[in-house]
Length: 455
Image (cartoon, rainbow, N blue to C red; front, side):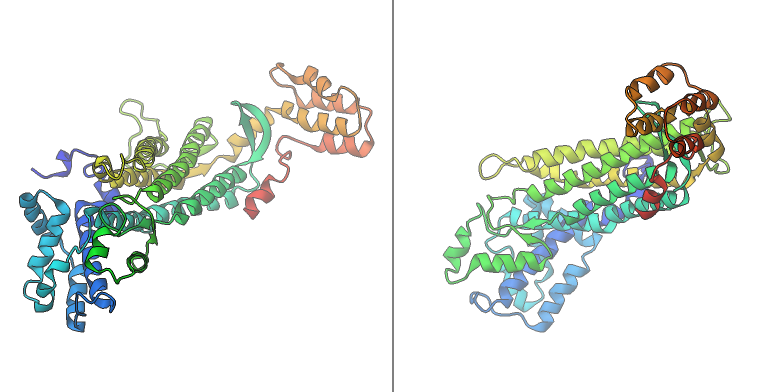
């Protein structure tokens, strides 16, 4: 029985609606479709090159028919490929046989049947298909989801640029910041990580069984095969790798997966910080009618979106890092350990997408509580020990740090009056004293508001 409730993976069951966009790029159907696209493009490229005189050029009508089949490849077509694979027990060879079968009514292609998959090893087709899958998944689903999170963080940064907030270094009250600046900080990190992920060039090759064009040269010695292969690979929108073993060594894939894992780590950091701010009451969460926070405690509005995001991004990173570490390693010129691992690229991307969706949903529910944030600041006048001792240092008062340490450290907080008495007794110029006496925990934010607005 095929049903969401019986799916082995939650990506195809509970969360199927949230990961559906990735089916276009990472499903078995998508892999077969990309293989067909590459095989047809290879046949067309051979026929179109005058230097390859073993195969006459196709007519415009045949080229159009080949292109239609590549563009219109359907699930029914993929099912037929799988049926052929049941006999061949070889997935790429099944694509070759399907193409012969599909075009047997076209005299030109039928006559060129031996040039389908000509001089190719399976990995010549697979590496290009995998590169196209990752490129499509990044551009079509992953990066747009990251952009949506960045846009929401930018909104929060601008809206709360001047909202003073107590910082907590080591979990303890520390020099104030603003809520907007903390959101801007994450947005800046995330955008940088996004650029790194987007900048990774997928690499591809089409150079035969061990990367040396051995069969190509024997069959057509006059051809400049490296130049031909470069034109073909770059024509697919993939950068060319001129030196490989039987497989393209997957270094570019590893770079992409590493870049995504680093991006996810930034979001994990955000998830945990926002979870903490909700716990402190700095953020409230918008309540959705009908939702339940706890099966026994009716008052609860749990930060489940950030918890879900954290959990799914952790799963994503475990897979992404395994992919990045395993894929570039192949015994001698080829072993098959990469094959089954590569089939899980979509699983890693799926957990990424779930994490992004949950994070964005959580960010959309956040409402700052200025009164709660201000109350924490008002109870922490001892954080002004820093500016006081710094002004004292500027005026060469000996033992500045130690004097403020004696006044504040481990005292459980001091009052405004106690701090002002201390400042009033200092041997400082009147303008310096006035600046310190005018300072409050809420106004001691430095350039945080400007940094948030200009980010």
